[in-house]
Length: 179
Image 1 (tube, rainbow, N blue to C red):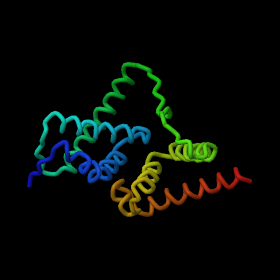
Image 2: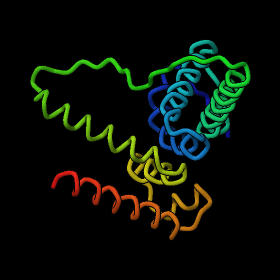
Image 3: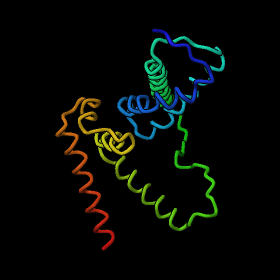
């Protein structure tokens, strides 16, 4: 059954497809830093398509948006491969983000939280790719361990071992630092 969608439906489409798209991107990228950019580019492209065509007739909206994400991943890594082959070196700093901090927040507390989060992310990124994906899927999408195992084509015990071993390492690291 075909569904007719328009630009007015964008927010509903975003809300109903976001978790599926994010899960697909997490499972199919080789660099955790690229996840947010690819997801954002996916929805920007969907928005531009809907804006250009006014209405669109699709059979399955989730499959359609995941297809856009698949193309974004292919283009992104194809571009990176070409860039590497051409020896173009560009320094991209993904840590620079413009944010407005409201006056009512305790700036010192926010900085401690932000620093702690940044340290955790750096630690997780230093782990192997599968472990980083397990953390991302578990803590960002609140997925069950069995679902993560299915998505990543590994055993559930492997998912548990990676998750719990890394949590144990983090506890040990931060307990020793606080002493």
